[in-house]
Image (cartoon, rainbow, N blue to C red; front, side, top):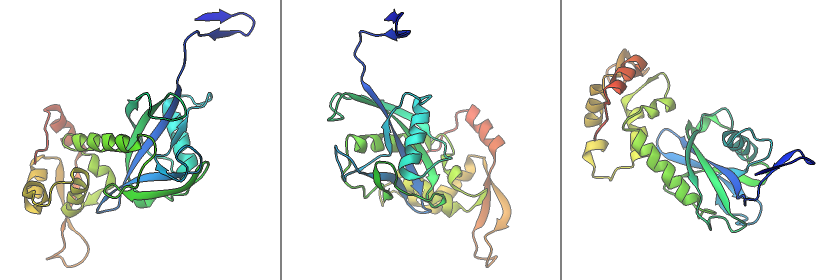
Length: 243
């Protein structure tokens, strides 16, 4: 690179691709897993569904800032934690030009957000992960990559507790694992509630509160809570949840 004394800018002889960000926001509704999509208002792929995202601007401080800005502009969602997922750079992933995208992902409680399409998104809408429409670009691959990351992480990290109240029931926690891992209907290891309860309690960081859900004290499910200190101890020894 050379410094231009007249423009006071560094000038590069190298070709530069465009950079975008995309956000895979999974929303849990108490039973199933959904993903937030927008309907594109511009070509290419006008009217098709896609992940919220767009081109990085010169004033974006980072790819993460770009992802948050685009997510807010196109869906009205903000104040969530997103983790960087992966870079997607296949040559023909965008018909306009060579575009590299950095994808981020998040897992949220779906009903906490007022979804609304904006900017160049006609509509913003939640879709069940098992019922996705045809998607623009390589966004189907990006979603599948994010799903696989969730399925790997849930064996090592208590990511499901971010979707629950401080006190929760085992059936509520079980629903999260079923939604993310999506086991076959005949998978008794994970779908059996008694087996699930035993394995979760064996981890040592899920504690009974001594309370039950308000109602019939003889039939109402017990309430549990997550013990952060116990989890940190389990994490040090590399405890893994197996089904």
